[in-house]
Amino acid sequence: MFKISLLSGRGLATRAAIAIIGASFALSASAGELVLYTASNPKIEKDIVDAFKSAHPEIDVKAINMSTGPITEKTLAEMANPQADVIWMVNNFALDKLKEAGALQPYTPKDNIILSAFVDPDGFWMGHNGTIMAMAVNKKLLAEKELPMPSDWSDLINPVYKGQITVASPIKSGTGYTIMSAMWDMFGDNYIENLNENVFQYNDSGSAAARQVGGGENAIGLTYDTAILQQVDANPDVEMAIGRMSPNIIEGAGLIEGAPHEAEGKIFLDWLMGKSGMEAFAPHVGVGAAAGYGKVDLSKVAFWHLRRPMNQDEFKADWSRKYE
Image (cartoon, rainbow, N blue to C red; front, side):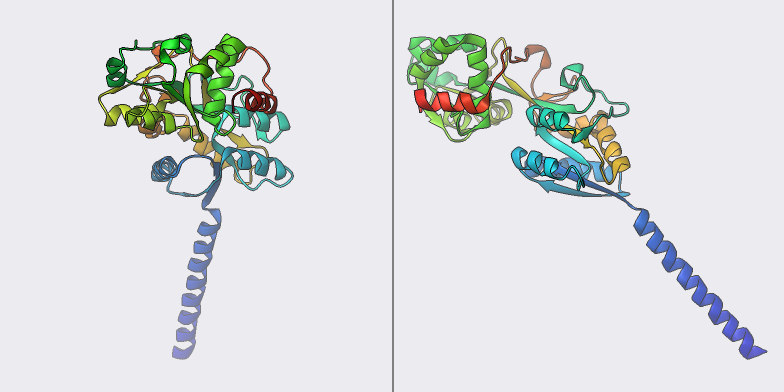
C-alpha cells in the first residue's frame, strides 16, 4: 500500500508540474504583441515606447524604424498580408496615401485630446504633433549689418537680405520642399525668383540652416521649429520668427487594415492620443496636437494649407532647371 501511495503522490506531482508548465505557455501565448512601423528619430522612439510599456507592461512592443517612403511602400506591398499593426510618426502626405490605397482602417482613439485640425476628417488617422516651418534669426548679425528683423515670409524678398538667407534644397530635403512649395502657393513665381536672389546657399540637410544661424555663419535660416529651438536654447543671439501663415506638416498615426494585433494597436493609439501620450511627446515637439503640449504656442500659429494641386516631381524638375 505504501508503494502505491508513493507512486500516486509522484503522479500528482507530475500532473501538477505539467499543469504549471501548461499555464505558463498559455500565459506566454496570450501576452499582447504590438508591431509598429515608425519614422521617428531614435530618441523619441525610445522615450515614447518606454512610456507606453510602463503603462502597458503586458504588451510586447516591436518598433521597426524606417524613413517615411520605405514605410509607405512596405505597408502598401503587405496589404494582402499585413505584418504591422500601427503606422506611427509619419507625415500626413504618407498617411493620406495609405488611406486612399485602403491600407488603413478608421479608428477614433478613446479619450483622445487631439485638436480637430490634426484629425483626418474621415477618421483614418490622427496627428500627434505638427512641425511648422519658421525663420531662425541671428539678432547679433542683423544688428552688426544694420538689417531689420524679419517678421513674415513676405519680408524675405527685401533686397537688403541679399546673401543673408540659407534654406534646404527642395530637391534634396523634405524641409526645403515643404517651405518652397508653400511659398510658391502663397506668393507665386515672382516671389520665388526674388527670394532666390537673397539665398546664399541651398543645403542638403533640412536642419543645417538653423545650425548655420546658430554658428554665426548666416543671419537668417529657413527650417523647422525644433531645429531652431535647439539653437535658441544654446545661443541667446538666436530667435525664432513665425510668419503670419506657417508652412507645416502633421505627423501622426493610423491603424493598419487587417492588423494582426488589432486590439493592441487600438490600445496604443488610445494611449498615444490621450493625456499620457501627449505628455510623453511634449518635450520633443514644437507643436503638440493638443492644447498646452509642445514648445510652440499654438495661438501664434496659423497653418498654411495648399490652395493648388501640387505635383512634387514636376515642382522639383522645374526648380532644378531654374535654381540648382
